[in-house]
Length: 218
Image (cartoon, rainbow, N blue to C red; front, side, top):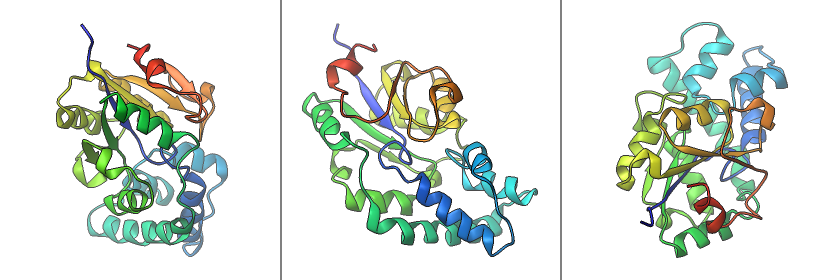
C-alpha cells in the first residue's frame, strides 16, 4: 500500500533564515534594559524557544500575562521591521515545495512564532495557498518541546503521526516532533548535528532534496 505522506515545516531557520534577525531584534530589546546576552546564550536559550521562555530566562523571573504580551509585541515588532526587507526562502525551498505539491503531499507549517511573523513570511513567499495546515504560537497552549503543535497539525492534515515528516532546526523543535512520534529532518541552519537530537536525515538546504528522498525515509 502506498502510504500518504504529510510534511510539516517549522518556520524560523527552516523556511527562512530568520535567526540572525531575531538576534538583532533581541539585542535591541535587551540593550534598552541594560542586558547583553552572549551568542552562546542566544544559541542555547533563544533559537526554537517561545517568547515566554526567553523573557523568563533572561529576566530570571516568570514573565507572563499582560507583561508577556507587551514585551512580545515590542520585540516581534522590532523583528518584523528589521527583517521585512530581507525575507528570502532557504535555498532550494520553493522548488522542493513545488515538487511535493506535484506529488499531492499534504503540507503544513507549525511555528512557535506569533501569527504576525508568519503572516509577514507568507506575504513574501508563495506558500500560503499550498498549505493545508497553518499553526502559530497563538494556536497552542503548550509550546515546543511539547508535541501539541505537531499533533494538532496531524489532525488538521487528516493523518496520523507516523505519516508525518517534520523539518526542524532547533533542539526543542526536533524534540517536539519526536515526542509526537514523527520522522524528522534536521535543518542545519542554527546548530550542528552534534548539538541536535538524532534525526532521520540532516540537510543544509533543500537543493539536493526530492520527493523520492523523503519517500525513502518511510
